[in-house]
Image (tube, rainbow, N blue to C red):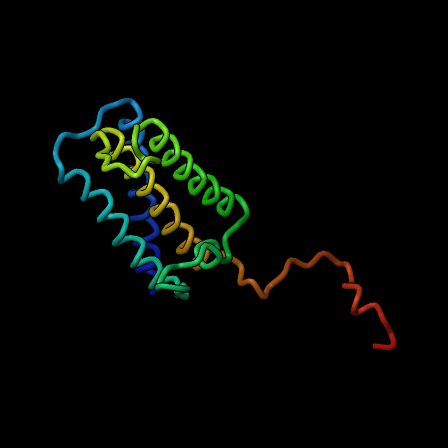
Amino acid sequence: MKAARTFFLMLALLGFLFSLIVHLLALLGRAPSSGYWFVMPFLGAFVSWICSAHLSGAKAGRMASIPFSEVVKDCPAWLKRTNYFFDAYVVLIFLGLALRTSGVFHWKQVELPVGAGFLFLSAVCMTFYAGSFSMLFGKLFGRPTGERRQTGKVPPHQNDLGG
C-alpha cells in the first residue's frame, strides 16, 4: 500500500508541475485549439484525485465530496497554506473571468473564449493535483492528529490536584 501511495504521490507532483506549465502558457495566451486538450488535463487530475482519496482513506462528506479538512489532514502547515492559496487562486481566476466576460451576471447565454476556459480549467487542475499531493503526503509523512508535539508544559486541567 505504501508503494502505491508513493507512486500516486509522485504522479500528483508531476501532474501538478505539468498543470502549472500549462497554466502559465494559458496565462500568456497560448491556449490549444483542440477540444481534446480541455478534457485530458482534467481527466488526469480527476483520476489522481479519486485514487489519492481512496489510498489516503479520506472520508467523504455531503454529496460524496471530500471535505477540505480531509484533504489537509496530518499535513504540515506549509502544505495547508499552499492548498488555501490555490483554492483562493481558483476563486480569483473565476471572478476575473466572470467580470471580464460580458453577460455572465445578466443570466445570458455566454460562451467563454477558448483561452479563458482553458485558463480556468488549468487552474482547477492545479488545485486538484495539489489536493491529491496533500492527501497522500499527509498519509505518508504526516503526524497523526492525536499525536501532539511535546512542549514540556502541563495543560491547565492537569495542574489541579483536586481533579
